[in-house]
Image 1: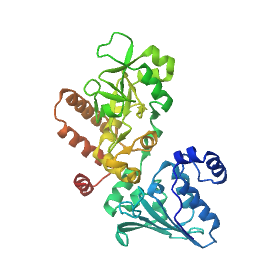
Image 2: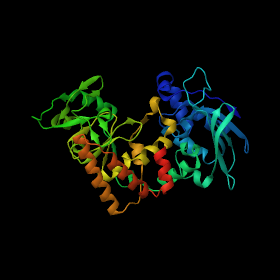
Image 3: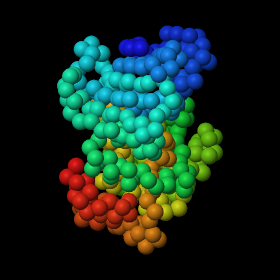
Image 4: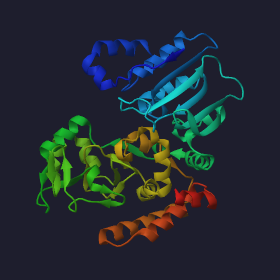
Length: 382
C-alpha cells in the first residue's frame, strides 16, 4: 500500500470541517492533540494492510518528534518499522512548504533482532547517511530525530538520555494560559520605581541565558511595548491567586522560543508572561546550569530537530523541560555548579565577561553526564 495523504493541520480542520474532525477523532486512536490529517491516514493504512503486507507513505517529518504524533509513533513501534527516510532539506514538493519524510512498514508482529533503517537523503535519489537501529535502542527514545545522527553524536545523546528527568524532581508549570496572557495585558503598566505592591513581568524576548533583561530591553507584549513592565499584586490576585504565589516563589523562568534553552533565576520578584515556563523546586541554580550548558544546546537541537521553525528556533515548553535529563550528580558537584552560576549571574549584572566561568561549568556538566574526553572535544567542535 502506497500513499501521499493530505496534510491538513488542526487549525484548518477546526475552521473548515469541525464536525468531520470530531467524527474522525472518535474513529481513530491516533487522532490526539492537535493532530494533522496525515496521522489518521497512516492508521487507516495499518487497518487496510494485509498481515505481512507492506505500507509506505510520504508525510511531514512532524511524525519524528511532534507531540501530536506521539500516539502514532507508539503504534508504529508495535509494527515492523523497516525504514524512515528524511527528505526534509530537499525540494520534494515545489509548491508546498513542508519538510517530508517517508516510512516503510510491515504489518506484522516484530521479529527477533528487528532493526530499523534511518536514512538521511543527500539528493532525491542519493543517501547521505544510514543507521541501522536495533529494537532495544529504538525503545529507549520517544523522539526519532536522534536516530538520523552519526554514531558519535548518537552515543552522546544516549548518555544524555540515560538519566532521570526534571519532572521527577521539580514542578514545571506554564506561566500563563492563552486567556491569562490577554488578561495580563489588561493589567500591565509601565513603571521603573516601586510605589505599589507589584511584581515585574518578563517574557521570551526579555530572557537571555542567566540574565533577566527587565529594564534593559523593552518588552513586546501582544502589540504593546513596555520599558518597565509590572502588574499590581491585587490585580494579579483577582485574575488568578495561584499566579501571585508563583510570582512570589523562588523559580526559574524559561523563554518559550529560542535556538537553545534560555532561563533565568528569580528569587520571587517576577511574573513569567506569555509563552514562558517556570520551574519550582530545590537546587534551582544547579538546574539552571544544566539547562544553559553547551551539552543541553547540542542535545535539544538534535532531539527536536524536526520541530524547528524558520531560523532554527524551537518552541520550548513544559514538555521539553519536564523531559530534560538530570545526571546523577554528587552533592559536591551540585554545590560547585551553583557557586559558578552565582558568579556568572553577578558578572552578567556587572557586564563582565563570563566565558571562562561557562567553560568550567560546561566541563563539569559533561563529566557529570559521563562523556569521555574525546566526546567532549567533539561536542566543542560541534
